[in-house]
Image (cartoon, rainbow, N blue to C red; front, side, top):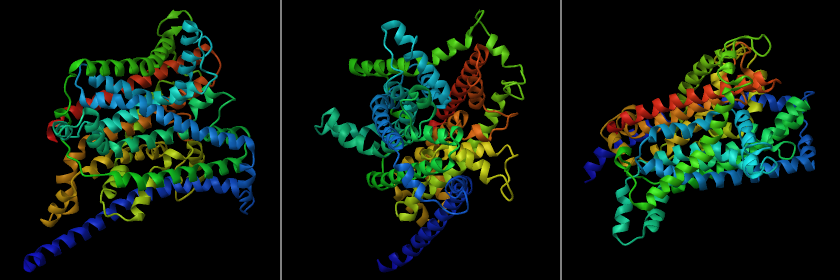
Length: 562
């Protein structure tokens, strides 16, 4: 026995050593990327605000926090984010179950439709919801109800945005959970709810927590929705940073608010990294096509009907309003606004607005490739369960771009990346780099629960048999994570198409993206500009829906390989 142990342990130690070295190597690329393209620009803009004369003015932090208006902004930012997250989970979790466990006609198309709202520019969504719940809107005309003066419009718009986050993040893992584990619990006498609560819910906890974290961060930094639907009454930190930067030109106050936002998000991520990790367990994952089946019984059909009704009213109706307005030309319904996109009036753009379509696709594909490379490396590095505090802190840091003002990042790019050796102001790659910063957290959060659910003994056995870390990843992890990788790529592509906050500051006038073009058109008076904005928004929806539908087909075609 001692001899056998002597023969086995050295390869195990060698595999562990090689695995640790590989993990550090995988961490190097994400650390360098975030250090150069996130930490450095944000630090540059903060230093510009708090060090205007060469000396740090930290007393400005207390002065800003002493203002009652700022404290009100902080309070509203926090509680509306919590309320939006809770409401999104309540409404979207049934949808995640339906997409994961039910097989029905049009499922792939509907999944793409559900994801489309996530990529729409916030200014467009805010305008669409204003048409629904504001003065003269659909609710006002039918029942005399207006919500534009209440916080409910903001909360519902946030659910509209983030429904897909829960459905795809939680549903992606739910679809791969072996249903026989829950069925075994029921055979032992547990009720349907008890079996779900004791077997399925603990397994889903990491994915639910990841989805809740992403929803909270997006609503905590909400900008366009609150600016349009909140008016002068409601303001988040993001809106206030934009106002202090672009309207009042008070960089010191904007820098203080950025620091506050950064610290709050960092604390949340630290708590998340410590709590979620304790709930992660090895799961039995199966082919997703084996778990979905047609609804059975009145209860399941009623649940499917309720989810479809929710999608129709909450997600599809605002999109229908946008499409209807894109065809509502002054002379009657037609393609006048679409034809106007092919002309350059010399006022808003240096090129015809239609050119933004090709530009957005080029940037989105580049940003997706960057996000998958960086996020995939980070997720692989974080897979090991024996990682120390440094690695767990790295896990939390990867989420910071979702919680830091996009306005700050955009201005930081202009200030920090405009001179050698990082003079990228004239390079087209600057926009995809900014978009990838937001895409990387989605790649990590989508892939990590699945990677950590893979039984670690499989990796250990492969390492003992002499497999290199790369072969372990290729033979053990990749077959299980391929589906999550495709979902992550879809998220990164969608986020890149709709990113607005940072892109608006760095996109060149001759190469605007679709969201930037929409915002510029909405910023100009006149029915023609407004109609063109609606037409571009419709094109953005169609492009995203087609891309996501293709992704769904590829993913479905390859499920047999898992």
